[in-house]
Length: 324
Length: 292
Image (tube, rainbow over all chains, first blue to last red; front, side, top):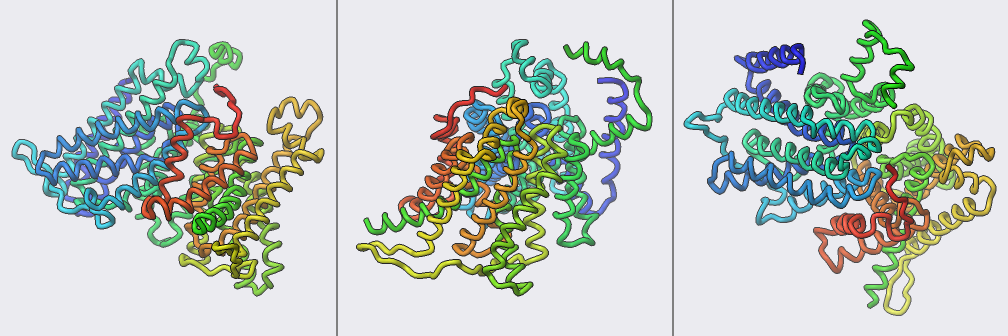
C-alpha cells in the first residue's frame, strides 16, 4: 500500500467517526446499514471481482448468519459466539456448495447459488419450529462488551464501524497476500495462472467460501441491528441487490463495494420523488453502466481521469512485450 | 393409478412449455455465449403484450396473438441483441450476465408499474373441457399445449437440421471462425438465433399464462425452471433442453402430491445440484472438457 492510500483511508476513517455525531437516529441507522452491506458486498467482491465467479446467494448467506446469531443470542449466549458460528457455518456451506459447482467451468456457480438462495428461503419459511416461519424471530439483544453497552444507535454504529474496519483490514490483507495475488492472476489469465502452478479450482473455491463467510458476518450484524429477522429479508432480490452493489461500485476495486453499497442504499432516498420508478431507473442505469464501463463507477472514474490527465503512456509494442 | 396418469400428463404438458423456454436459452448460449438471466421475464412479458393489445386496444384475440409473436421477435430478439448483447460482447461474460439480470428486473418493474401489480386473467386458446380415459380425467388444454409445444420444437429441429440456414446456424454455434471462412454470415446467423428465442418465448408465454394468471412475478419461477431444465438436460443440446424441461415438469407436478407441497419448489433445485455433482454435462450433453 502506498502512502497515498493510507492517507485516504485515514481521512475516510476520521469522517466515519465524526460524521454521525449529533445526527438523527434515522441517519445513524442508514449509515450502520451501509457499513453492514459494505461488509457483505466486500465478500462478494472477492468472489466476483477477484475470482471472477458470480454468486447469487449472498443474501442467503447473510440470512444464515443472521438466524444463527439470533438463535445463539436468544439462547442466552454472547453475540461474539453467534458471530463466530455464523462465519464458520457460512464458510463451510460455501465450501460444500462451491465444490460441485466449480468442478465445471462456465458460470454454474451462478445457477447453483440461484437455486441455493431459493432453498434457503423455503427452509427459513417452512421450518417454523426453528426459524419462526414467516413471522420471523424478534427480541434479539444488542451485545455488551466488558460492561460497555451497544444498546443506543450511536454506540451500535461505532460497534459496527469496528467490525467494518476489521473486515476491511482482513480483506486488504487477503488481496495483498500472495494468495490474493493468485486470485487476481486467476481472473486476468486463468491459463497462465494454472501453468504457473496456481491450483485454480482450490483458489476459486476458497475465494467463494471466504466471500460467503463475509456474508455470514454481515448477517450476524443484521440481527442486533434490526432486532427482527424474517425470511423475506433474504430473498433472491436482496442477493441481486448486493450483486449490483459490487458491480455498480466497481468489481475488483478495493473501494468498489463500499461505494456501490452507498449508491444502492442512498439512491432510494434521493429518488424518493420518483416513487415506484426507482427500481426501473436503477436497473436501466446498471445496463447503461455495463455497456459503457464494466468496471463500475470506479472504472468510469479511472476512464475519465485518464482522459483529463493522461498518464505516461507505455509504448504499445512494449506493453505487448510485457504481456508475453 | 389414475391420479398418477393425470399428474404425468399435466406434468408433461407443463414440461413441454418449460422446454420451449429452455431450448431458447440453450440456443442463445450456443450461438453467442449469452447466459440470459432475463429468460423468465422474456416468457412473462408476451402475455402482457397480448393483454395490452386485446384489452387496452380492443383488438380481437386471434389478431393479438400473432402480433404478440411479432412484437416479441422484434423487442426480445432484435432489440435485445442490438442494444444489450452486441455492445457488451467485447467485455466478456460477466458484464453481460449482470446486464441481463438488470434487464429482467427492469422488465418486471415496468410491467408492475405500467400494467398492473395484480394477477390478470388470461384467455385460454382451448376449451376448458376434460376427456375421461378409463379412470383418468385429462384436460383438453393440457393435451393441446403439449402438442403445440412439441410441434414447435420438432419444427425447430427440422429447420436446424434440414435447411441450409439452419445448418449454417449450427455451424456458427459450433465453430464461428470456420463457419465464417466457409462463407457463413455469422452475425446474421446469431441474429436469427435471437429472433427464434423471441418467438419461442412468446409461444411459451401464450401457452403457460392461462394456467396461472398473468403476473409480473411469473418470470422468477419460469426463468429458474428454464435454467434448470437446460442444465439438467445438457447445456449444449436442444434434445437435452427438451428432456430436461419434460423431466422438471413431471417432477414438479408429482412432488406436490407425493412429496411435500411446502417443498415443491425445492425439488428441481435439489435435482440441479445432484446433476451438477454427478453428471455436470447434463443427462444428454456431451462433455466439452474444460473450456479454460
